[in-house]
Image: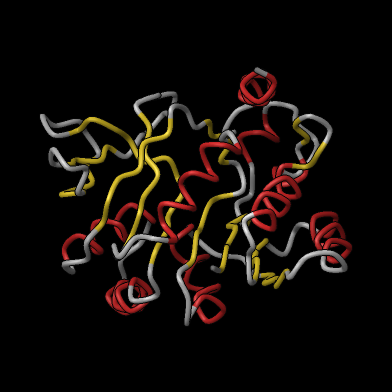
Length: 231
C-alpha cells in the first residue's frame, strides 16, 4: 500500500500564536510530527511514502531528505491553494495501488491506526474513511452513515444521520483519483468537496471509527496532542 502526507499548508495560525517551528517540525514526544507519520507508515509496510510540502519549508525539506536514506520517500515541493490541490499534485505517485492519505497535523494512536490499515487492506470498498465522535474542530465535516457505517453524505452541519465527523485519514482505491481529476477540471476546491464528489460519483465509502483524533491548528493543540499520546 502507498501512503501520502499533505504538509503544504502555511501554518499561519500557529505562527501568529507564537509557534516558531513550521507545522511539520512541531515535536510530540521529542519527534517532529512529520517524522512520526513517516515511521508509522513504514511500520505498516508502506511501498512508498509520498509527501508534499510548500516552497517555504527548507528545514522540512532537509529533514525529509535525511529520512530518504531510511524510508521510501518521494517529495513534491509545490505551493497549492488547498489540500485537494495538494492531493492532485501527489496523484501521479499514488496510481496503481490502494493508498492512505493524511494531513501532517492529524494525531492519532498507533494501535487504532494499525487496526484501521488492516481493515482497509482486506476490504473491497472504494474507500475506508477514518471518523470519530470526538469533536474539537472549528469547522468539522460531519459524516452521515447508515446502520452499517456506509457513508451516505458529508455535511457542513450535523443531520440526523451524523454520528461522526471526518478524522482526516483517507484510505482510497486509485479509482478515486479519476474523480479527483474531474474535480480539478470542474474547478471544484477543498477536500470536503472532493469527498462529496466521491459519494456523488457512486463510490462505496465505509466509515471506520477512531476513539479520538486531534488536529494541531492552534498552539494550545500541541499540549493537547502531547497529553493524548502520553496516556
